[in-house]
Length: 58
Image (cartoon, rainbow, N blue to C red; front, top):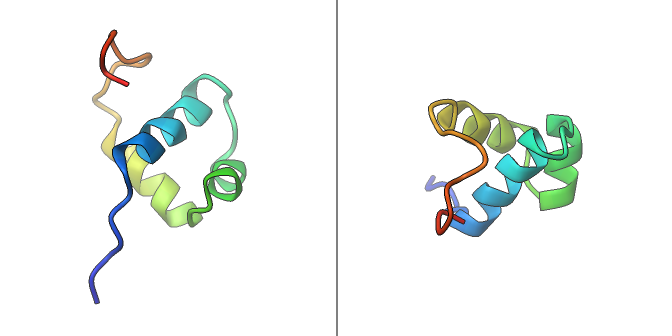
């Protein structure tokens, strides 16, 4: 089964809620209508990204 693609805008929103609003993965999942697993996946994959994103990066 193929996974549904998440728009980049939604991934940036997840990272914003995680690092700027400091919400839990559960609250982010509810806010973005994603599973906690999806939130965890995108936060884990973004570990090497500097936050906040540079101008023009989001």
